[in-house]
Image 1 (tube, one colour):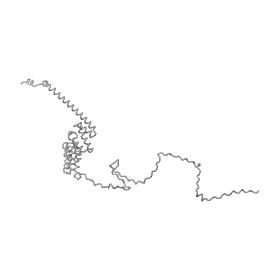
Image 2 (cartoon, rainbow, N blue to C red):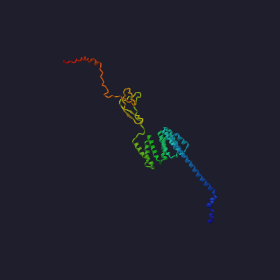
Image 3 (cartoon, rainbow, N blue to C red):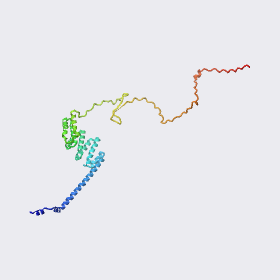
Length: 315
């Protein structure tokens, strides 16, 4: 077979386009439509995420967060709303409902960027409620599924604490001793890795793992009034209004004197009274009044003698 006949047998690019022009055009239109649909869906999804984020930022109460969870289900904002709702419920002392909310988050938002933190919070709250088995499962999920995160050593440390609290010192020591070697890929400055050595020292010191009740309070007869000793200081263990936790010590007040009729209060602005004063020359000397006794005892003076007539001279 000659070369000319072989070249003629092979279809050229122009012949391919001519024979498959309609197919090429349809493929191009389908690709353009797919790109347009992808762009529109991505834009709508981004707009929905923005709207959900704004709703979550405006939510302040548990009821507001429930609205965000219901209207923006499976969104990132809905996951954030579940985490915040669990925190608010725990602060309101609704601890069981808070744990249930975190369980809902773990079930429905496995791809959330804060999933490991949610597992750690769930395990800590379960431990606080006495749910030791469930807390252990939550901590183990972190050490197995998120072993390369900074939270994994903390979860392993909490597993050792659970074993130690149950009286399993050998198991706890094994966890503490193996913690540094298990997480060698993490930063050496991770604080949770170094805390395992402190736990081992505490175990060797035989520190108590349970709280011990203090001595009983002395019995006080409420029926019999307590009379304070005169002059003794008054101790107030309740503190003051400004600082209710700080006890105060104040001297006892002396017994009050019997009530006396108070003097009339002076007027606020008394009117000055002007008393005229005479000069010394104008004031006559005062005569001392004679008493009746003085008049009785004083002798009566003799009558005065008549004056003698003048003697006439002799002529």
